[in-house]
Length: 89
Image (cartoon, rainbow, N blue to C red; front, side, top):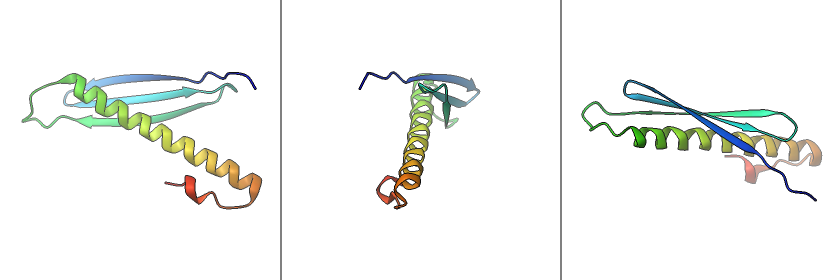
């Protein structure tokens, strides 16, 4: 079995007090999956853009991880006809 490389590209966009992140996973078979995340700075907090970037990115990657688990569970269930309950979140 060989080595596989999956690449994730994260794009971050700031819009005022909001930060949006889009995490795109490119798979070997040219399929793509996207996760999305947001963060919003409380107007009374000091501006620290990196914190917003980190939160939005973490949420986008978490969304992507949940999608991967759901996809794996669906594929397992289609092959085994048994619910993959331990993979469902």
